[in-house]
Image 1 (tube, one colour):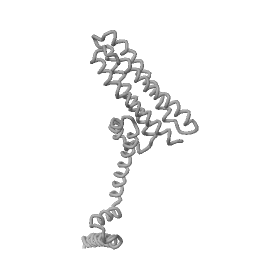
Image 2 (cartoon, one colour):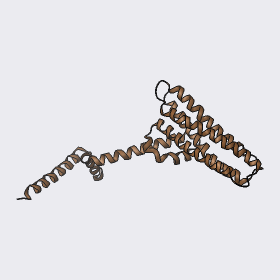
Image 3 (cartoon, one colour):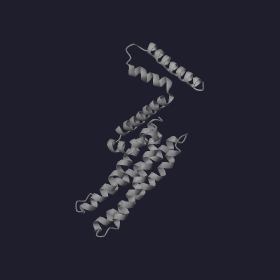
Image 4 (cartoon, rainbow, N blue to C red):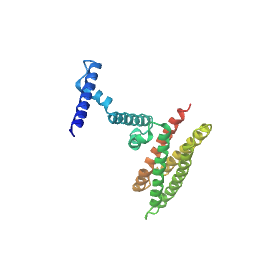
Length: 226
């Protein structure tokens, strides 16, 4: 007797599921495959399956947003490689994307500044290389300042002051990009050592490209408010 009621309960549970499947079969088109019917059954009986499926759809949407946003930049491949891993965090939000890009660009620029400072200390740097290298350090330092000012402005941009704050951010990030271009221009002379020039180029090119991407994202966000 002790196992009678559990057995009755299990039998009733099995009967209910079979009845549910039968109802689904009667409700859908006869052209539906058994797999489609089973999937529909899972959706109607298993909330965890529904939740997991919604997460997959959301993830696909977020990744597609990154892909579409990056396609409008000058460096789409670098863009997608840099930001696709943050798709869930960004949640297809242009403001979050612009803010994330500024933070990533700032961190990369800070690292570049440190690398250039170390390069200045390298033994054997010629005077013709030392001067533009020191200028480059100053230019990148200015970029750091301009990007640093932009981030809190972006975080507080909502409200009546949107246009004013956005104008400041666009100005600062544009100036940072100009500073980075100026740095590279200082190493355009062919008389400079190839290794020094290559070292600077490796450091600065990615910084400039990420800054360009950030500016594109900022402009995209600005257009959503017009």
